Length: 215
Image 1: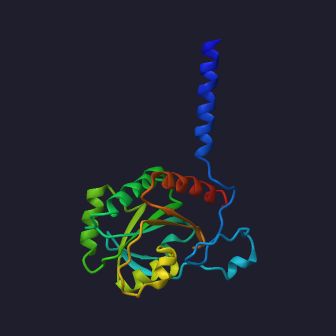
Image 2 (image 1 turned 90 degrees about the vertical axis):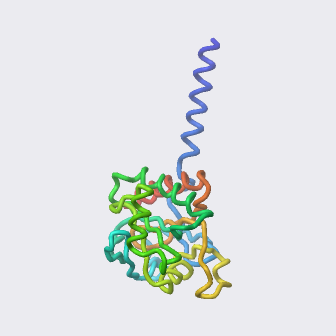
Image 3 (image 1 turned 120 degrees about the horizontal axis):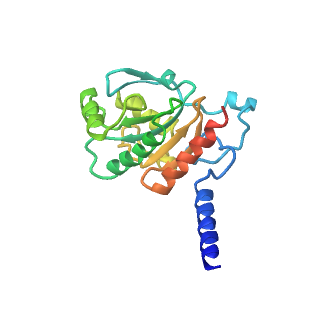
C-alpha cells in the first residue's frame, strides 16, 4: 500500500512539473510600446497590418556577413543587447541565451540576435573571437555590430528593451538592459523576458513553442 502511495505521489509531482513548463497562454499577445501593455489580437486580424513591426536594419555579424531584417524573414527570433567586455550582467545573459541555442539548435525556424552596445570596440573580429570562446554557432546566433546610432535606435524605438526607462534617455546615453525580446515571423514583438532569471528563460522557451504553433 505504501509503495502505491509513493508511486502516486511521484506521478503527481511529475505532472505538476510538466504543467509549470507549459506556456501561460494558448496564443501570445502583441506589444507596440515601451510600457509593454499586451494587445490580444488574432494572428489573422487585419489590425496587424498597421501594428508596430520591427523596422528594416542593416548590420554585420561575427562572420562579416551583412544581416538585415530579411535574414529573419519567416523566422522567430530572440533579441538582446550586450558588449563583449561587460563584467556585469552580460556573461549571465550569454549563458542563458546559450540555453536557447541548445534548445533550438536543430530548428532552423528559430534564431538569436545579440547587438553590441559598444560597436566602436566590438568589431567583426572581436565578435568572431567572442563567439569562438563562448561556443556560439553562426547558423543559429548572430552577434552584430554597426553604427551606434542604428543599434541604439533599434533598442529603444523598435524593441523597447529598456521598457519605460528608455523614454527618458538621450539618444547617445549608454544602452544597458537585461531584457530578451521575442519577435515573431512577421517582425512583431510577442514577449519580453528577464535574461538573468532562469525561470524567465524557461518561460521564453515554452512561449517560442507556442508561437511556432501559429504557423
